[in-house]
Image 1 (cartoon, rainbow over the protein chains, first blue to last red):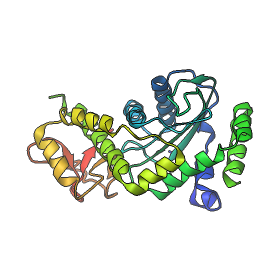
Image 2 (tube, rainbow over the protein chains, first blue to last red):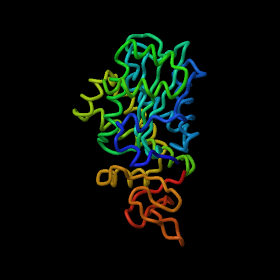
Image 3 (cartoon, each protein chain N blue to C red):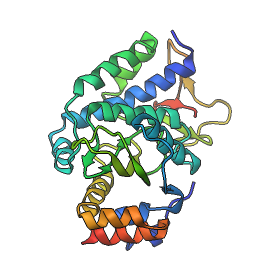
Length: 165
Length: 118
């Protein structure tokens, strides 16, 4: 399991230190919320963040049953802390066609940011990462650029700059 | 009752749901989620899931969880290698842990947490 080293992450924001190429899904296969959460959990399992993707996906569905994390304007930030998550992670995923996500504005979701962490009570870094993600995508031009970005490195740069603005 | 490994899966999920429920009742966490635009109006759905999970766990194990999790919020922890992820102590090589009375669940000899082998 690879984590950014302390030295490398010293001058990085919480969000920046968690953005990894292996946690980028350029185009999701599924268009339904439940299957998308399966796809995202499987991507976490591929990098060792969890060994139980089915249970993590179920937990994400439970969080969505509590209330949608589709915050509108094509953005969703599914999130959960779980015993079965080994380390904090942010997974960025896109869908050109859009996903039915029961978002607050009823519009399909095109950009997803899955935020997971181990089950620490009131984890300040987890909360900050959630806030950083939501702040980073508040401008329409940023969302457009993220959708058009050709690769992970471009997505990463856009997010880091937008979160710092 | 389902087999032990399935009960443990249910127990782990129950613990995660309990954390979600604590968050949803915590004014500070709630304000944070509200401010970010995350909906969380359907707490009843979580409570329903909680009841379903409870019904999948043997009574002695459930009692142990409900009693001990008041003192240790993260009571069920994974084992990585031979290390308890709750207290980070190595488990003895002779036995992976000891059994909780009335169940065959392993617990950490050092911190008493319930061990979950993935």
